[in-house]
Structures are given as C-alpha cells and as structure tokens.
Image (cartoon, rainbow, N blue to C red; front, top):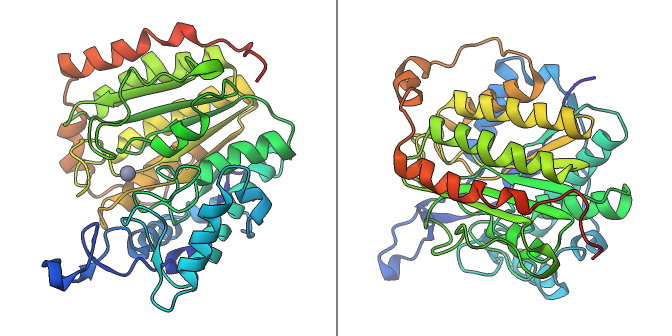
Length: 376
Ligand SMILES: [Zn+2]
C-alpha cells in the first residue's frame, strides 16, 4: 500500500500579499513592499521537486474537499470562522486575527480546502486506502488557536484532523508531534487540558511566539502531563533533534499508545531558513520521518499523517521535504540532494551540553504519560 499525498493548486494561490519578510507592507511606516515570506512559491517548488524526483508518482493522490463549517467549529469559535470568511471576502483581503496572518481574497475557501483535504487524508489512512500520508497544504495551521489566526496560520489543520479522527473515525488517543522550528502554541492551547491528545513540540526556544513553549508548560487539569515542549537553544541541529526524538518523542509515544500520529512538519528549522536559527539538514528530516513512521508501525498500524507547516528557504525547503517523504515512504527519489556535500559537516556537529540539558529536562516529564487516560 502506498503513501497518500494531498495537495491542491488553490493552496498555492492563497494570497498573502506584499510584505517585507513577515511584516505586511506599509510604505507609510517604512515597510518596503516585497513578497511575503509565506507565499505559494516555496510550496509550489516543493510540489515540483517531488514530481521531478519521481516521488510524487510513487504516492497515491488523495483529493481535497472543503471542510464544513461544523467541522471547523469542532476546534474554532464561530467568531473566528466568521472573521476569516468576512476578511477574505474583501477585494484586497484582510487578516485572520493577529495582524501577521494575511488572508487574500478567497482564502476562506482555500483554508477550508486545506483543512478538508487533511481530514480526507486521515480518513484514507484509517480506511486502508493508503498506508500513511502527507498533506502539502497552506495556509498553515499550528499557531492558530481556537479563536484567532496567528503567525501566518488560519485554521489549525492538525487539530481539526485530531478532532475529526475522534468524532468520525472512533479513535480516542491522538498524538501530534510538531517539528516546525516555531512553537506549536495553537495546538497546545486547543488541547492543553485534554488527556486524549498528546501534543509534543520541538522548537527553537523563545522564537515565535515570544515567551511560549517552555518545558514547564506541561498541560493542565485532566491534561496535565499530556503537553510536552522541547525548547531547543538556537543553533540546535541534527544531533540534538535526533537525541530529542529518541529520548523524548518516541518514549512518550510508546507510553501514550496513540491510535493515530499526526506530524506538523515545518522545514523552517533547516540551516538556511530565514525565520529560525536552527541547523537541521535534509537528512535530519529523513531520519525523523523514519523514526516517526517506525513508531506508527509499532504502535498504531502505521497510521501517520503529516501536515505541512513552515519552511521558507525557496531553494532548500524542497530538498528537506524530499528527505521527509523518503523517510515516510521508504522509497528513494531519483535525484540526490545537491546540497548534501555542503551540509554533511553540519549534520556531523555533535550535540552541545546545553542542548542536551533541555532535552533531558523534558525527558523527565515523560513518565507522567500513561495510555490509560482519565475520562474527560
Ligand atoms: Zn514555523
């Protein structure tokens, strides 16, 4: 059985307008108009590289569909859904809530397509049509909370997928592993007191959102222990991330015994990404995908769906995705990473003591997790 793959051309058309990096253009305030860093271009290049490497043809396409309003309301407030709809009905678009999450004209429908496509992919995995899956969607989702868009995100695609799996597919325990360079704060906030969703985030410490995603944020109420954060120091790379996988993520998954693993895959922790100071390489994503896929095979019949989040280097992000897809599918692409010679040294960097100290701190929280979660 092949890996499922979901993408839709309209996702590349979600229009974030003009900006200087991540700040919306404002000539009056001295913000020079240029392209927004979260644009369709990099994701389109991802799609094209999957095609040219032959990996796209080795996966089974799963068609997108629009998420219904009731599906959105499983996670988001009615006010947020209405705001996105109204803002994106404007001729020149608007914002999903925090002033850093532009929506273009029609983005409401595109965001529903992205979210609905992820739900379809989860259903395809759970019904045995595909073995696991990757959704190359935008707008991204992991910063979006129940009541607002944030950090380029509109609707929280992974959170919606978790609620879909529980409501429609009869699953109880869902794990969400977030490897984007930024804290998966939206996902954390949605499930903070929920013991049935284990939310694990590996991210650069104190990057975005500021002062968010510390080790001490460990869940609350019935959900105490079911949120794990690994706030990695700036400059953390291949060795630290793999150590975090083996020391925290895999043991946490083993204790939790998920019925489905969702992965929020951001590639902005890569060495050349403009929005973080981490040092991952394409092979890091390949190795992480292998480890997570292996865990899914051992724990939940291989049921794993990865959802695209960040990744802003136009030329390196696509190769990081190729690495991840190779790890997910177990197949090699037809082309070799042209940057591998340059990045080989980066991947060989040993983990530094202050990186290990943070990971070990989170590892001490893992025994709080049990598979027999209290009734919510
Ligand atoms: Zn990110």
